[in-house]
Amino acid sequence: MAEFSDTHVRAKKGRTGPIDLKSGAHHRIVVIRPEFHRVEFPCLQYRDGSAVAVPREANGWLHPLWGAIESLHDLKSRPERELCVVGHAAPGEADADALSADRAEGMHAVLTKNKDVWVGIAVRRGSLEDVTSYLHYLYAYRGFSCECVSPSAEPTAETEAAVHAFQSDYNLKFDATIEVDGVCGEQTLGAVFDTLRREFEGWLVQEELAETDIRLSETAPHFGVGARLFNWRLLPEPVSNDNRRVVDFISHDPDDLDGVWPSAESLYLDSLALIDQSAPPYAHEYWAGAVRVWLDPDHDGDDLPPGIVMRLLGDGYQADLPLADATEDARHHLCLTFENVPMLPRYDLWLDPHGEGTFHQPLLLGVGWQALRRGCREGMHAPGQGGDPVPPVPVQSAKEGDDELEIHSVEESCFEGVEVEDGLY
Figure 1 (cartoon, rainbow, N blue to C red):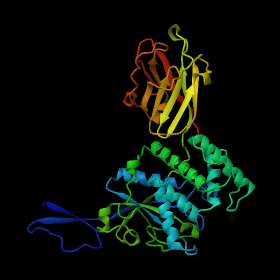
Figure 2: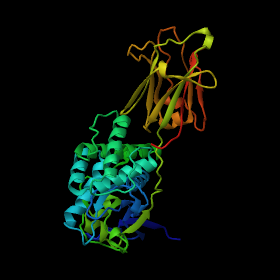
Figure 3: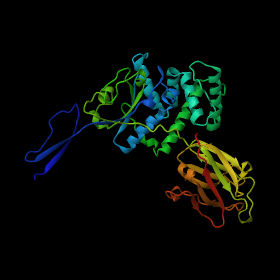
Figure 4: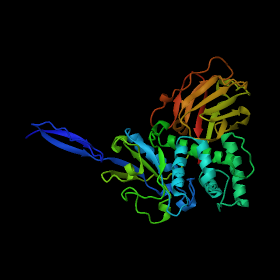
């Protein structure tokens, strides 16, 4: 049987010149079609005239950031791909071209942590209805106190109370000092952005993704196409205007675009393209619960110094607790409880034995959130003896599947541990 020499040809509309095939051989030409991946629309729909995407009752409280998370999974599995965010508008919406561009840019701002751009779009293209819808979502799914059963574009006693409660919650959860006045100004919109980003960053950790997985197109990371709808195979025939007020996450290989930057024409008009689409899981979970650190006060006859202060430290999170705040559990251990600890990639736990503000003893360093959730136990230090701190537990010490990590770093040492109560942020 004759052997075939395979020649792989990428299907492109702008191909120039013949395919170079050597004579005197059997050839098999393999045509590679462009492949695009997109996320289904339900969580990515906007209110009429708005460029602020938030979960709302009208879309079943589906969070738009899950569309981004689903796209990042595709990018992680296909390292040759990059992502475009494309905005669309309904024909009846005013200034459809600019509105669709703002929708795309607003989502891009969340992905790239550009608060100023997002706040500017929210001021220009958002409304109190968008904000109060999100506040009620935070109340229903995240443990905030900002209930708003009837989100409204016009201020009411209920919306003012919800904004007031959110401002207080934000100051507590973010250790911030924004004004608590019930007025939704730019400062409060910035707090809304911070909360959206914290959700997004928590989901990155939960889904084992990273900021480096956000590979946006270098030439056209986001753009709007107004009220135009293109190839029905990529954009399904709309059954209502709700299906037109969307952003579209499209991941693709730049080599499939004939060397031109992504555009509506290159992404939506290519009849050769293979379209793969997926639906995000729409999960609401975002673990942020109570982290408990316990101490054995009677080990080896030593009493714990009364001035002990513990510090739990993560990226953008810090909390200090004195031993005076401890409670006693059923094992007669003293427990210090850090409340509302968000999901972050890693945490450090430090100890200040005498409350002098030095925090010179590292108890845990670089411990991931999942390890904290499982529960960690370590031989830490001999209380009251001073001296050099015990070497912290390295992250790689945890074994896959362990329910509890127990390491005896020092003989006859005091044992501390960390445990987490699951809860919704």
